[in-house]
Length: 361
Length: 106
Ligand SMILES: [Cu+2]
Image (tube, rainbow over all chains, first blue to last red; front, top):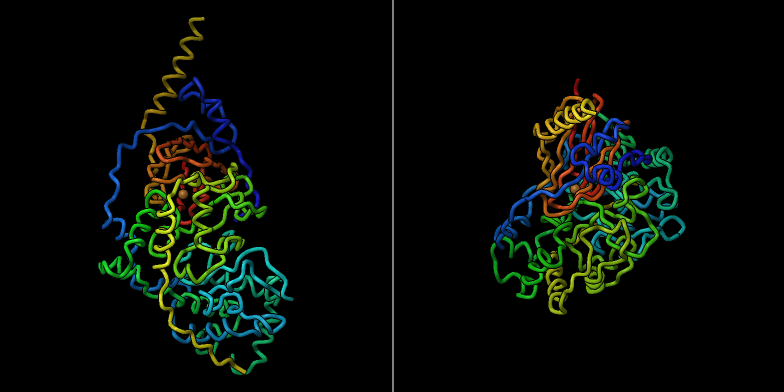
């Protein structure tokens, strides 16, 4: 994604030009290869709100994990990726692994407000969970990386994080004799390289999937699987509180970028699309699986509890041009707020323990 | 005087014919473009309709064809005219899965 994005035509400019002239207005703006005409309201007709069964059907768990054509699953790859994921020798200090910040013990995050990198220095943003990364459309809070393979290499090289130049890392891995046969088994044609390192880690990460939670049993028809409070909370989530406009589908995200009005200076996605107002202070919508294990919350870790998160949305956040049009004071009752929290707690599965692998020497 | 009025009328009818000669419409319901790829003639417009329940922000970062509709609310429709041949990728800045190609031909 190019960092430079000139804003050639704005809705305001075209609306002014079009005012009073109907269709002629837009013809009068003749600069550039693309000309944006006036925006008008059209009648979409009244759409009936979907019934509860139709809404529930949108949350059904997928049966299989999607792996990309370019990097299909093999057990050898996933096993190698797991060793690399837990290997602290991937950092220059030999003290940090991927798992340091994305730990199975803490909902595959780190339980901190913001991550801690090289030399124990604080990072700018909250360490996101890797749970259900296989379904991600774009990666990092600001969406700067397109694939999980690219993502895997990001923190390893980042000076503030694991601070390990990739060439140096490959030299180090070559010197650890037991890695080479593992790479050769996982990548018979490609062997050991930066590319295969990334593919192995990404393959392992894709196997980290939130397991069945009480919510899933309810979606599949067991009415007793969750409480009445949680069922009411699900209705508020999909209705009055508008949560599902962004936290949609079984993993509770459409990977969209929204400024939700947190009072932080961080422009997030805006760094990559400076000309787009709505992308300033916008961050990628996180999924909500295992959310009760993932505090503190938000891209900056600024909210300690789910109750505080619901309060933030109820108030609507900082009103500024970039704020999502979906953010506004909601007027939730105390009951609706506690129902929402009860609902979110049904997304916690009994994640089975993750065995730390024995690492090559 | 008479000549000017006639001239204006010709332009007007030409333009309104263009506007009425139904542009291809791109829908956005369910956070997806109704077409992954469309082909139009140079100088023609596409009508981008937000018939979804949430705002979208259509734009292009294709060099030379950059545009940005800003936040387009549900129930709004915007015409975009493509004046030069080539492929223009249209995306939604908000939703990374929304991508389509506009092929502009002679
Ligand atoms: Cu969109």
